[in-house]
Every structure is written in structure tokens, then in C-alpha cells.
Length: 346
Image 1 (cartoon, helix red, strand yellow):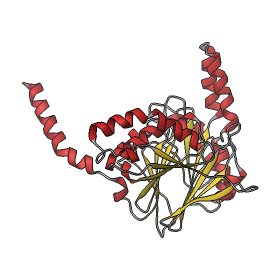
Image 2: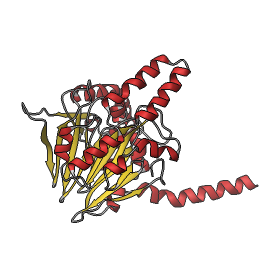
Image 3: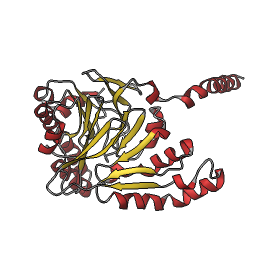
Image 4: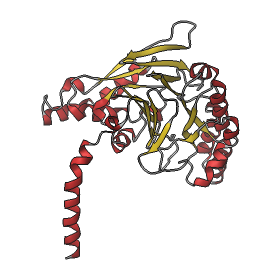
């Protein structure tokens, strides 16, 4: 009897809430300005609360995805970002944790509104290979969906992705790769050796600006391009905490994993180094992402940051999945909220 009553209440609740949930649209709720939603703030290391790298830049009612690691499409949905609003994906580099969810992001964008146009994927040379691979991997899946739902609902012309490849002019390390509807996107070279190409992006809109570092060590080019930006979103790791994980792997007899962990610090910035870059660029605020290693306990935030707060005295946050940073048009500050309830670093 009690279970039956619970079932009826649950069904009634879901029936009442579903229309609101299905029509939710974060982009429509945001004011005019430049916004960034942190879809994935983690790394390849397994992390219960952080997905693989992905961010959504929101401007002029459109969404521009930067990288698309695994779990990206699911978290985009949880953040109430309507996938039909995705105008393009920009890739920083081709590590698996930055591209693993690309096919799923495209699938959700395609079926959201039956878009007949391929999703644009913008990036450096190599983007065409990544896109071709995903298009081939999803070709059978897409054909089934069109056969099942019909061309009017799942048009075959919109099922694939379209690579838009750019190359820097000789001797240049930055260039504008997108300029439309008031949004200007500048790509720039960073140092993630031996990964090449490796890029960051700067977004300018309505007098506000956000820089995404991609994966890099301390980078002079990043500092140059970031000058005066309102918000810098920079990858970061803690050598001290990573060394602890490496030691645990060795003690567990996992020699190969330990070696991989030992190699990680030489191509990512530390929190203090990211803080130095933010200070030297004169940015307004700093958010650290691509957190390595995972931080399962709140008390680990301090060791992870080290003396970053002393090096950069502006607003400094450990980004978390579900974060939304808003830069209102005509303003100067950065507003932060989290759609999931604060996780590690909140």
C-alpha cells in the first residue's frame, strides 16, 4: 500500500515538473554580456566530481564549446544549456581528455532541433583528422536515427561535423579565428610540449574578455594575449599532491602508472605559476581548472593552491563543474554561481 502511494506521488511530481525541466534554457536566463560555463574541470585521472575538460562560452545567445572531453554532453544538459544553441566547437589540442566527448556533443546538437547543418569544429591542423574519425565512427549510428525518425526530424545532412582548420601566418603566434555577432575569438600558441599544436583562446564581447589557457606550462605568449582580460581560466596542477599519488602507485606495484604520473608536471602549470601569469597579465580574476590530481577532500584546496593567493591578489577560484562566470556588458566585475551546489574548491 505504502509503495503504491509513493509511486503515485512520484509519477504526479514528475508529470508536473517535466515541462519545466524540458524547457529550461540557461542561456535565455543570462543577462547581456559574456559568460563561461565550466562543463568539465577535471583531467584524465578518474574524478567523481569533475568531468574531462570542457567549457561553454556564451555570447549573443549563442554557445561556443571549447574542447569536449568525456561526459561533456551529459553535463551540458544538466547545466540547462540547450544543445541546439551550439554554434561551434573550438579545440585547443587533441589529447583524448579534450576530444573524447565530441561525438556525443554533436549528436545532442543534431537531434535537439533537427539541425540540417553540420556542426562547425574549429581548430589547428589535425582537426580535420579528428573530425573525420568521429564522423566515420558515428556514421552507422546516424544512419539508423535518420531511418528511424525520418529526414524531417533527423536530417542526414546535419549528422556530421565540419572541420574548419586555421594556420598561423609565418612568424605569428596569435590570430583572430572568429569574428561574428560582436564576438571576436583570438587563438594563440601555448607550450604543452611534446603536444603540437597546442592553443589557448581569448574571447572579446561587449567590452568584456575571457581567456582560456588550454593545457600549458607558464607561457609568455599567454600573458601577452591575456593582458587586461577580465577573467583568465588556466589549467593547474599540484606537484606535491601528484607526487603523493605517484608514490602510492609505486607502492601498489603499478610501475607504469607511476611513471606516467611522474611525467605529468613537465607540461602543466602549477597553481602559483598560473597566479603569476594572471598577475603579470593584469587580469581581473583567475579560475583554475583541469585540476590535477583530483581533490576528494575540501582540506586539500590549500595544498593545491600553495601561495597562489599571495602571488595574485584578485578573485581566485578553483573551478568546479557547474560553475557559471558572468561578465555583464558595461560592467567590470565577475559574478560566479554554481548550478550543482558547490563541489571541491567551491
